[in-house]
Length: 338
Image 1 (cartoon, rainbow, N blue to C red):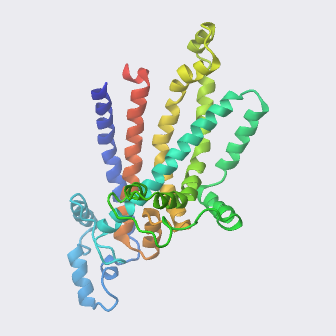
Image 2 (image 1 turned 180 degrees about the vertical axis):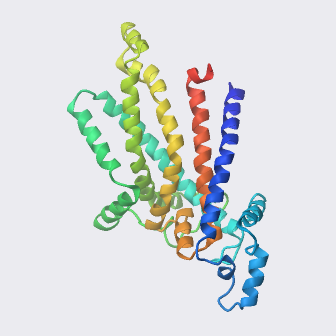
Image 3 (image 1 turned 135 degrees about the vertical axis):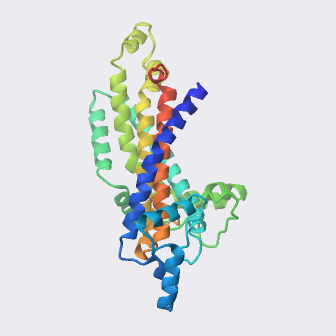
């Protein structure tokens, strides 16, 4: 079983390599045809023409674009992402410093979305055939119509200004410091042993996590609700009723484990969208992650940072798609029999 899962995951990861390569080529070419000179951007404003030309030669910008891509790719696979024109330091250092914040935000939002989505789907299914089912579906439709950045703005207006119970920027209260051990603030704040610091981190995380997670949870609710309705049409559900099993036993003992498969696939395939949604949400909440960094990089035409973050977003999407396939293989006996 385990070997089969790793074999499926390995095949899926190998199959996404060409996709990843095509994306890198498209992004690289797009950034190169922009009216921005990376050599000039990487030098001080006082640099002479001769210095700019020397820098262009050093960066390989005087070569054909396919050679530029080849040189960039060779450096990238050994971890050299170039230098940031804005920060005047290695791009890899900047990105790795911001990456844990975005991972922490995205995974927390995903957990929130799964909890709300699965619970909501079960509740709405449990009241099927009543007015409460219709009301629940209307509410999910309303939330689905609101993008995550709009939810973020509404939360700031309501819970940051009208009823100021949550902070609306940063990751920690002013004056508090957390020693860096893992780079993940939730973990590092726990390691301090000071629960007030951990509470402050949770307090700052609340609104951005809810904004991101709430935008994704209605889709999970609808998919699980629909999947449960289809599952209850299966013959084994009727047989379970004939054996005298209660509705609770049928739902949680048999139906849910089969109906959850589409949700697992949905979460895996849509996590890239949620991860990408951090871009605007981080900007709105002044959250120091990759999304915030990406916006600032685009404002200053910091091409190496833009390229590095684009690669991370692409790799994350492809990775979670592959994990979703492996999870589907694990949960679906029909796939294992092929």
